[in-house]
Structures are given as C-alpha cells and as structure tokens.
Image (cartoon, rainbow, N blue to C red; front, side):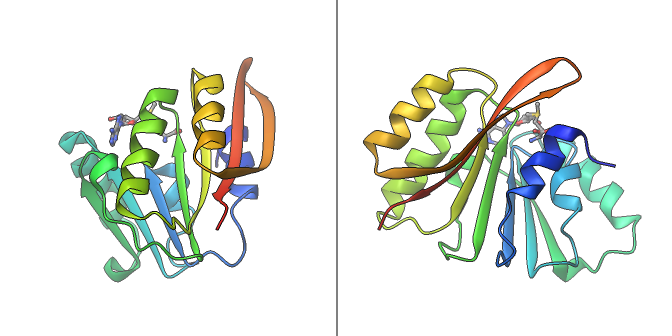
Length: 160
Ligand SMILES: C[S@@+](CC[C@H](N)C(=O)[O-])C[C@H]1O[C@@H](n2cnc3c(N)ncnc32)[C@H](O)[C@@H]1O
C-alpha cells in the first residue's frame, strides 16, 4: 500500500504514460505499482546496495523481467527516451538535486518532451524559479500532509 504522498503522485501520472522513470527510487515502491501496467518502469538510484536489494525484492515477485529495469547511476546521467508518453518522477530529494537532474536532461534534449512530477524536500522556490526560467509550465501544484509532514508536488512539462 502506498503512502498518501505516493498515492497523490500516482494520481498525477497521465493515463497515456507508457514509460515511467522512478528517479532516486530508494525502496522503489512508487514505480513497483506500475510494473506490468505500462510498457516499462525504470528504477534509478545512485547507491548500488539500494539498487541490488530492490532487484532482489522485485525478482522474488512474479514480475516479467522485460517489464522493468533497475539502474545504478546518478539520475542526472541517465539516458531517457524523450517521448511524450514518458513520465519522470523525482521525489524525496532536495531541490538542488531535482534541478541538477533536469538541467542535465535539458542540456542533452533542448526539446524535452516528458512530463515531470517533482516533489522536492526543500528549496521549492529555487525549483520553481529554475522551471520558469527554462520554459516549463506548471500543470499543477499540490500541497499535501502525510504523517504531519507537508509535501509540495509539482506536475510540469517544458513548453514546446
Ligand atoms: C529519501 S529517498 C526517496 C525515495 C523515493 N523517491 C520517495 O520519494 O519515497 C532518496 C533517494 O535518492 C537517492 N539519490 C540521491 N541523489 C541521487 C542522484 N543524484 N541520483 C540518483 N539517486 C539519488 C538516494 O540514494 C536515496 O535512495
């Protein structure tokens, strides 16, 4: 069962999404929810032990290996597909990490197509500033409380 924070993020994933990136995935509980329901789920975390234990946990379940991939990598270096049917989730990390990841993708894909769902733990103002300056529109901005902690959740896309 997902926490209400992850439930909210899930409610923002567009039905037309075919590929989901759970960046900075840690436990991977968010992305796990989508395995077998869309074309592919990509889990990315920079800590190899985290990715190894996620791989072991997922392999004990009845998921088809072709339906997901677990990648040990700094999320700012990951090679996305750059499709409109792609959703990239970055949650549970600071605003500077969110900015670093998205600006690195922007440098490689000036016409960045995926939808992003971002939930920075801090420095929301810096994230908003970065998005506005780089031509992203804010599709929604939700504020939710989960176990007495406030979370900001942004859904955003780069304007073409
Ligand atoms: C608090 S967990 C968030 C887990 C999950 N996304 C959530 O919201 O529940 C943060 C994770 O981000 C990972 N992380 C931090 N910086 C990263 C980066 N640059 N690239 C990939 N993973 C990163 C950490 O290793 C850690 O597992």
